[in-house]
Image: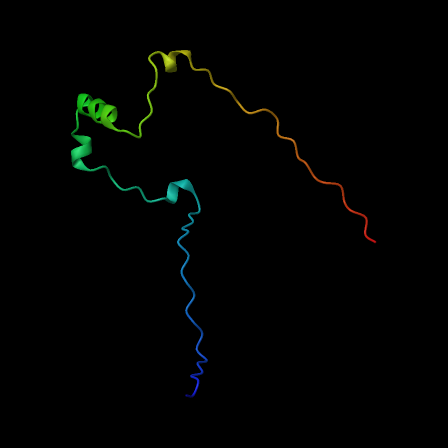
Length: 83
């Protein structure tokens, strides 16, 4: 049986990464009409039924404090001596 030889290159797989020049250029889909018309009580009820949602204790946001990161340090390893 003769081997089949092909010279055509296979097409490159397209990357699924999408990059934008800035946050302002990211397209935003509008909220659905059902979501906009939902009452606050309905939102709270659905959030309470969501098994993935964590519970936030009462008064959490009143006691919360803002912490800013400290100064960044640049670490560059020492150069190795060539032999």
